[in-house]
Amino acid sequence: MFKAKVKAEVIKNIIDIASPLVTEAKFNITPKGISLRAVDPAHVAMVDVDVKASSFEEYKADEMEMGIDLDKLGGIMKLANANDTVSLEYDEDTNKLIIRIGNLVRKMGLLDTAGMPDPKIPNLNLPAKITIKASELFQGVRASEAVSDHISLTATKDSFELFAEGDTDVVNLKLPKDLLLELNTPEKCRSLFSIDYFSNMVKPVKGEEPITMHLGNDNPIKLEFDFTEKNGHAVYLLAPRIESE
Image (cartoon, rainbow, N blue to C red; front, top):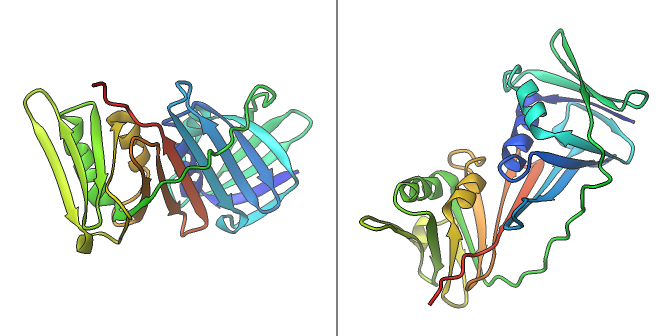
């Protein structure tokens, strides 16, 4: 059993967070809320999303799995404004998700979850922790996209630096500790990442909202943030690009 009412914005947030990595996802439904975890086809990045039942205006659920085509769900949600209330109900007889937006009813066929894996989050020891306003980070990422296909991120005890170098141009965003919301690292940490992936991970975070990065040396980056008034939490992992000698 699954029956819920929720602001359209909450569903749109989940789609915005997961869809850059995967087009299909297994939603794990429990009485406490909804979660999904998925790895992109290239096995470069992973997403873990958790939305508490308190995000919903109404929420009743048993433990179950739903395989959802995110492109299809995204198309349906384009019919709703952010503040519209959307009703969701699982129809066991037809294995469909019934979505109601105002007077509109859409019955969406669900995917078989048998072939969808449950990836484990690796236990990473990442010494550096940086918390920054999303708008600040996104400005550096946007500037870097025009210059290179990868960026380096460096944390020291005193500053955080984003650096991109192309054939002719260079982008550098360096923020001292007092301009960051948090900076904590016992040593200098630096890793290189694909800008396409990194950009997609930063985009769902709005404006002045904080985004936290956990960084090591040539290690994956762990990037996390809250959404829907802290009732939702998202974590991304992104493998590093290793520089060739």
